[in-house]
Length: 268
Image: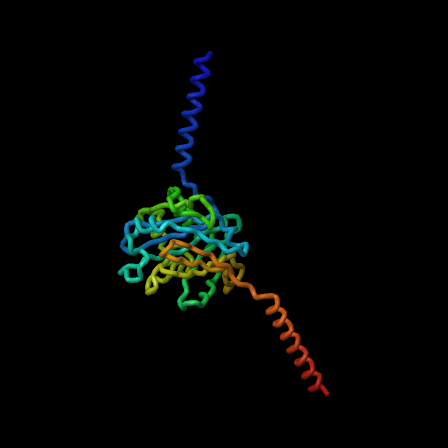
């Protein structure tokens, strides 16, 4: 009887070890997370980091992520953040909410300091197609990389993966620069840009499935990347101050009064 109990305990421990090993090997990416991907023309590898659930980017809260420059240097070389590279390292962010078919993706700026033009929202069927492409990308194995932490003061590791660029589920296979994800606009900085990854700025948009043509995605804020430190900052969209809104309302009311008075005078 004692032997049976001991054997049972050993079997339980062994089973737990197997399950633990299997869980670690599985993809820990959760549906609804935003991914930031890095690629470089001619490089055999991509680097992709899981930034967490989309909901944290819709609350109007500024966020800071500490990416691992050691990981990026190991993937793309020690000069990955240099503007003098022949082939610059490019990056972008993309994710989705499968419950609503909302898409979240970035668009590069063409003029420094000026927000990019909001992209057009897609029909629900198109956005579901993008989700399908994302599902393929998300099947890669994500593991914790040392030196990457999600926000200031946190000790948790970001989940990241180094992919083979030629793989069918890699970041490069989605080819976001050439609308491989089916978005119709770039989610990376332009590959003809001369700025490279150093202090890059990308605008984040939420695209709710449209019901009519011409509807624009909602601007949520922008990501800035300080490639010298690996600091990725999410800066929320600045809403007009109450005082500004009040002055605007007062101005519209004043104009309405003038128009009414002019119409009244013309009827005399």
